Length: 330
Image (cartoon, rainbow, N blue to C red):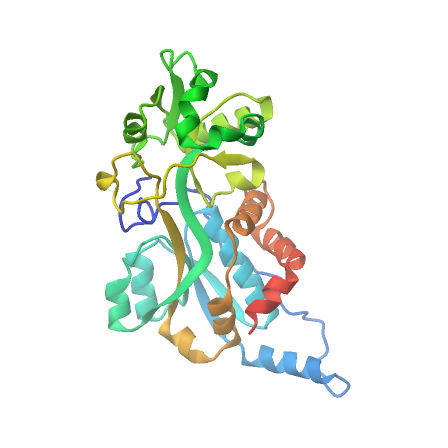
């Protein structure tokens, strides 16, 4: 997948490239066996039932990467706990989903990497940019955590030449191996090497799967590896990797980069229908208040990738973070 400015698959907004497409999954739901008799209920129970009665039916766009599924499923489970009906609808990202919001058939985009590509729809009034969801998209060069522990200053890009020999392979021609994103990914690795006069050779991995395998072997076998990756990503829920740091980013498009500074950080954005925002519905409150971290998403995504049903993985996180979830309820 490509990374280009103003697209999820792009550098200003970075990208997430995960291929698990999941069908709609129900969350925890309301206990169907519970009595509807409130004569002996407490004030708190009555209030909860009133909220449930007010909660409507809403549609979440489902985009085809596992980190997105993690966030969408948490919101689905929480909405269903409130008594809402939450439908998950698989759609392509960007224009297709924006059109669906404008048509009234979609109410929520959990995370958008588009850097404002939705603006023309927002200007027409039916699409609302809700704000950041707490996830931050970030590309970088990573090493396994054992290397950062053994060589603490390796995380400073200025020190990479000091350790170049550790990364030599049969492919790198006597230099350190610098594993880049596959063909089609926008990267600035060669610029970084040139600007820093680094004794490294760019090697294309050919696929994201090859990068995952590179880091998996480096962690499991304690072998040296320096490779391109990005977060949030379920890989970080399974492996402990550490990012190499360059001076703070000073460019917004890859063609502007001279290689002396880092990739940009891109906060991921929540989008909703005007219908949801104006509804006063409890699910609107949850969505507007919802925020979490890359680590939260990565944890659930890793469980899903390992074979856990998304609704189960999401509920596991909800149960372990109930105070956070309660804060979303308003």
